[in-house]
Length: 277
Image (cartoon, rainbow, N blue to C red; front, side, top):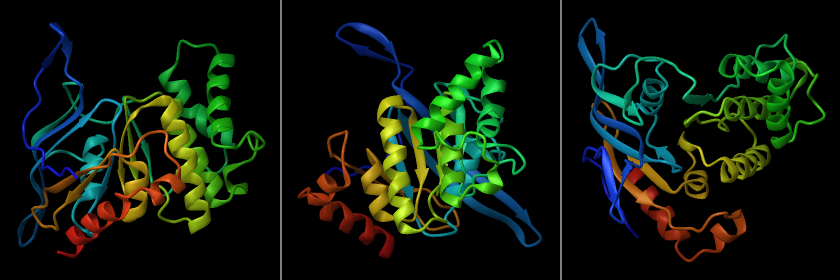
């Protein structure tokens, strides 16, 4: 079982079979720092945080509450200023929000007076302004169908259950075709049955789209089931990457095959031991 803490900077190019290819690093966090000024002095949330995430990789991030996981994700999304270091997507520095990064929050944050279709269309209209209205509507409908909401296109957000609203949030994020998908505990407020259904929905779409994904979770089993790699953050203040764990299950994977895999409980124990250390 391989574990490693990633600290090296990415190379700008890679040589494969004598041919020069662009680096496979999709997301690079280098020497990242986040400081909040307080009356008693600076509070350092994150410091010396280094992480590389590869193209088409699904990474889950775990750590104790208050360690800065959401802070880090909001900085990647461009919603929170960087105090030090840098974040780059395919080598391009993050300077604010952009359509190259889709975000799924714990709360779906839908426009309550709009229908499910209209909520998804909001992002699609901005990202594909040169497409026809019919083409944009087809994109929105396609992803709503993918999350199991083909019968709810015209239902207002207020008429949808919490689980259905989160399905709209998932459809909205995939529909803008981002290079990186950021998920901040998207299933944290749902009951266990709905949570399991949405994990399956998410991974089914991801298997087809293969968008680089970074997901925060407090659920060790969820972290293992979804990820190619689990990243463990140290407790704050001055949190950084404490360890990483490669999850070597084949894809596509089912919950049954994961639970029956001989390495499953080794992975689980490793993560729990880290959290309890």
